[in-house]
Length: 420
Image 1 (cartoon, rainbow, N blue to C red):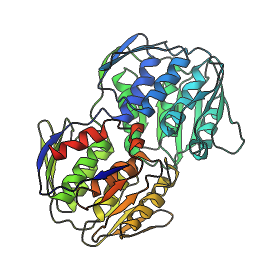
Image 2 (image 1 turned 180 degrees about the horizontal axis):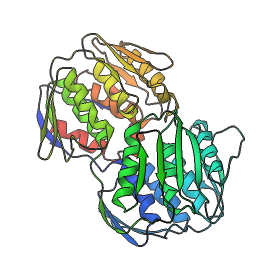
Image 3 (image 1 turned 45 degrees about the vertical axis):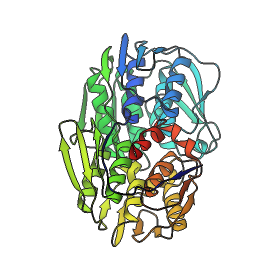
């Protein structure tokens, strides 16, 4: 456990956060499928991204890691067979993206993970793969992992895809599109939620030399017979991780600049800084990063369907704001590493804050949070969000501080910058 020490007064600091988790996953996959040697700088080294990297190695991809950069040797879209099950922990991103990538591997691949991962739905992606000519199934027959994919050459074609639970179903199919015989045409039948992550996928594909065609978020085409191009690539800082430090500024009256963040990033989570601006903070875009200066906070009413990962962060800040904050269209948070709506409300309740949720909406009534021992629900984002509360409220303890390894292994080291 870790007890958080409150700040005695506002401070002014610059912090650095690791590379984007979303970009790292996608760049690893594109590099593995590319036509040669790819160098990736500033890739996130975390539990989730290591799981993706290890899975790619099991399919014959060579990866060199010197601690500062990754060198990935692409296999031109042809992955080797893997006889044993591939374990993906509790990484939903790895499970969804690699379920599609498995269609390019020779023979049968089985992807599995923790009990929590086995409770995260994947049938919509399986249905999409089947429409593209891939033999895919949920081994338990319930629409959840583990999944079995029989791979090799993928025909492609048209698919209607339900993306109301996750945009990753669409990203997964897009990523393998260049290596299909006929190309793919995806019609989004429902959704998509989390639209910025689709933009990240398309941006990654474009950077690796693959052309796509889109009609808004309703129709996507990828020509077959293309190839990801080898080269040197860099991962931009993670805006989800930046959000914890902007949140700390918001509730303590401090000024925090997160170096390297860009207000024009395709990462949707950059919007969290603007939401803090609506709550009363001063947000400034510098040449080398976005800064947030805290202030007296007021509640907001905001739609966060496209930026679900930063909902717990906003919820903690809302606990210190005047009024009732309403966060709309976030029902898909129930199927994350934890039921994040329930986890947020439970832990805010421990702190004496009125919070609740229904099918699609979360609300938080601001007040004076009190001391509490925070159960992280084995969820990295709960741990990091509630650590921020301890910078303002005495005697806040994070019970499972190690769960940050999933996405931000150096979180506590960066957090210590507030005390230097």
